[in-house]
Length: 427
View 1 (cartoon, rainbow, N blue to C red):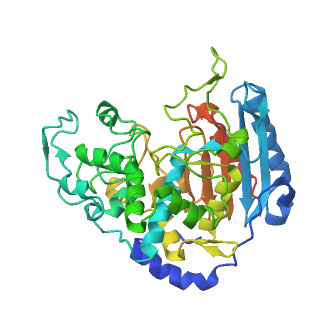
View 2: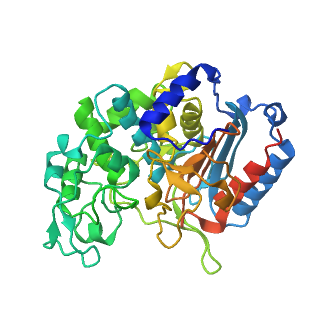
View 3: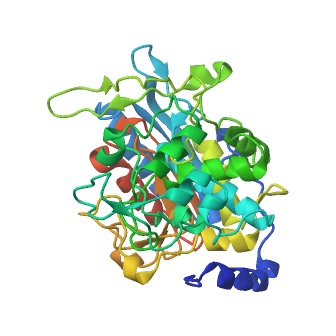
């Protein structure tokens, strides 16, 4: 396996050399009927049975209401199963195509939309964001990021760029941060245009390029896509990603004809309390929201997201539809964060020592430091309701597990699943 640690220009040059070596993209069909013999693609059926037993036990023990998990290798589906309930109260069983809020797993999709515009020459990584969103020309930086006095701020050392937003190095904060909550920055009742202007009006917590902070930045990129493309963000994604990739159940809300497949969100069971429903959002996920939130707003299914991952494994193409250049895929799935800013982490007290960050997703840069099985070059991300997805170019595997529970890492289900999937590879 070639260890890719390149900048965008280097990745483009390398991809041109590699493109003739790429295999024809597999035709990915995703249903129980399309499952192939695991051994035919070098996966142990016996170890998949152990995975099945482990996931069944999690539901049987009442820890989580239900889940869906899928595994493919070399574009062939070897595992797709649903467990438990998508709606306990109404006794609706989980289905293979149940629809989940994927929260931060929206980020890689939004990043791909931005890279499409770069491929088309309509946008550049080093473009100042203010070129597209005028309110960003007046951005300020806190003189003291700890006190966060709105009146004690200065000009930034340089402008925020498109690449800063892709990399979480813009100096912005997280949508649920105390800073943004106290100043009422984020509301699903606001339009994307209103949100980004609110974001620009709050001082940065640091100069652009000086620190990695998991942030609202990729939602801001959704507005850039709207301005550059002349389309609303949802329509852009539908026309340029979801339709070409047959991701028919992915979008910013669950439409009426899909609602019988909606998985409800629960608080995970504890030793003291059983499962219970999460409080409803101000704007239900069954209603089209004014805010098209590219960092956290999408719903999807395991089959849809497996298609998305397979497209990236195929260097931007699936079933004859090319949505991204191979050089852009290589750049997106290569660490782009400077060594001086590593390690990164959504929790500063628990950094991800094995990972860097590409464009919209994490990338394994030192598998020896992974807490479970991984290879260098694996790209991945998860969501705050328990969804997890990853793809490994080294083994050709795409893997997705979807739950709807808080906390997202309840009972380490996704981590156990990941370790066992890694151990299932026999060839």
